[in-house]
Length: 254
Image 1: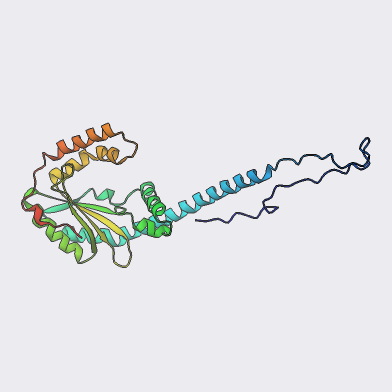
Image 2: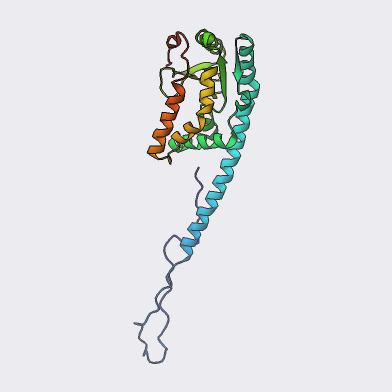
């Protein structure tokens, strides 16, 4: 976002006072070789500082307003389109359920933080576009029993695909630190991305239990030794999770 710097009262050159008229000064005999040094120009740095401060205030106000509008738009898509569809899909199979539905919409401040990261990497994006790229602005989790997991996930992916566009599927059951399947979908004609995770009861509990460790691992200020210990903690928790039968049949996409 650019804000044109207001024109100053000069063209950027330092103000220079002309030499004083000493023709009639006592003892000078009309000589003009005595001059008064020009005063340093302190106005320009002050003016630049004020413009910079003003620009920062305007940017902050515009950013807050844009995020508020974008957040309301995302919430409207969640309430009006995605959550009703997810509840209809849930009703089609009583063998599993949506967990943590109260957390389906990311908090405004976290949404703003992630949108800001998208804008940093791609300044040409609008605020709405940056927010729409936040992959878990809206998120859901299906939880299954171990013996119903693979066939249940496959059936729910097919149900979702009749309503939304699949853009990403990651099967992390072979991974050492995290067990589950994460998918991302796009709402047709709205461009908003949302996330659906698929867990067993054990993998869901493990994800909740290790969430604090996960947040510290992804924090760039976390020291390497601490990060290594946290990753080892996640591996110790994940190794205890039973792997559902035939889960490798669920292929990654794209």
